[in-house]
Length: 494
Image 1 (cartoon, rainbow, N blue to C red):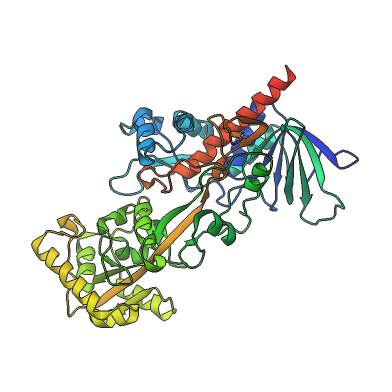
Image 2: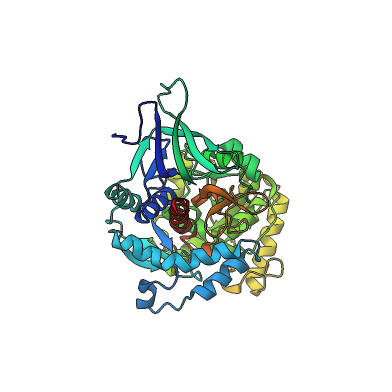
């Protein structure tokens, strides 16, 4: 790939250097270039576009699409929902900047050729904030890359940043990096006036996941572990003086792979994604199972349990109800609304040796297969069935319309749920202009952050009630960071 920034001694220069070429990195790149800055992107993998290639859609409020559908969401109300979700622990200025810009970002992407076909809620009762990309539309990151190249942006793939160069005052003035082949005797350097860190977090590193969140990947967490996401940018920014920010995994309740999917299961096993009896490995109920509609809340409940697991139980009669009446909880954009030959699907999964789906002919047999004390599980089922008969759940206060007994004499099915994760969030503290800040809250000259590396807005639980949020924050914070970096460069010229 041509590289017209390289000088004879291996050095180079650009007004703005962006680390990473995913959603946040490309948004920052285009925004900085549109503001008149020369931009160089360093991407450590061999491809442009990041781990999710732009995503399926974005959160936004007060868009034209919402107005056309008479959706009455407002920026004011949404700002308060996000702040109340975290009990005002998140940065209100950054949340406000994100919400205020979100609708214009949809228009910005649409002007470049991204087609949005619908705006939906993730589940019944959630807010319709997810602007769904038309499946036949080009990937969002591909559209941004094309726009970036038209603006003269230069890309170097297979180049891993090794350090941020700072001057005696602590301002960032360059980046050192190595290429994938490691042919250089010494790291190469590019001089710059501003660096935007957008490297996607640490979700591909089991060690960093445990260090930052306490989860043990493959044991009590089953996440999308893109191996290139190893916290590089977070480490570089902190070494340059940036303060840490709260970190979390973007978690949801799910079956372990390969049988995870939207809302936690693949569509064909959607009867397990319903408000059915859920017990822990002690055989005890621990949640109002209607919380299953909110995958983030359900994940929190499961994480508290011994081993970080929960076992959902339903009988053939309950599944027959779903066949007649449809599932209680449907997923947006999924065409399947009721089970289709559920027992055959369960048989297939069991035959493949997947250990987290069980079938039995009695409560005691199910307890034995699940490793639960049979007397405790029997007592739990009896108490639950009594609540179903009376329509009053005095233990977990589940709404009566979801109370369906687990009948004796019927085939019983069970699924062992764990916590899944889409990736990490947080690590670098920034202000509302996406400038990295030091422990005193003061901006570090020349250092900016965007995307998952800086997203600490959710207080430990992703807000599925307003879906599309983390992807949207990546694009919006990237735009903010790119503009801020370009303006900082222009101010230095004055």
